[in-house]
Length: 320
Image (cartoon, rainbow, N blue to C red):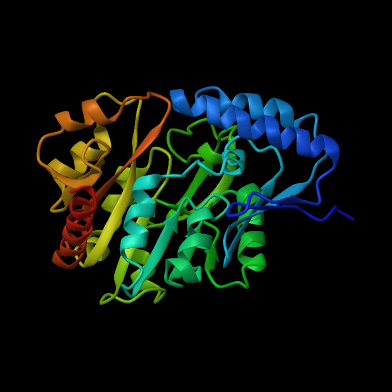
């Protein structure tokens, strides 16, 4: 029988149920995150995954807030940064989610991985929103389903990939956070079903009149995913897309700006505001690390644009 997970509370810093060696590892993982944060955590994942090989196979359950628990294998290089209580995962998404606590919206969490954002957005401090977590990898889906279970199954899970149309694809990759259906032409990997965003409307999973935040963490298939959701995206929706730091052409942002009716919005760390962009050169300044993903937003919704304006006004008031 598997050991019970180690417990870690991000609010208090309490670590419970860990052996002396596991506690020592927690100090190393936390210190490594603090040090590597000065250079965008470059090398952290690799070092943490090496340390993980020396640890017993066991999960850690991190209390993200009083109503949200997120579980993953102890020592995982991607998620162990959460042991560093000063670390914030995807600040720009948290800014929008916290600014929409009072809005009746559904999160469509595409490329959900283990379900971090679905766990948080469905929690009481974030407004107890409905969330649909979509993940194609069998390996990741098992952990996603586990996180739904330990949070009272309050968000839905779907095992499929997101693309431009229904079908099947081959999923490949070596890192759980970077599995992709993009460019797999050799027939290897796991065969997975693919749906388009608009199929969620067709299948009755969501309604045309709702409000949606659509996270597209789909590893190179962002443009295809946007193409598959014209009806959804013409309504009160915002897409939250990853713009890759190693892409000097800003391909995803360029597509949103030039090929869709959506307004392109990016988080500018200099102003700490969500800025509407008409000129892509701002991304040359914002995208400072080639190994990091940067989230950009696209919306055609006057409702969500107004909500973002309110968020920006609040930031301005706090800094005056």
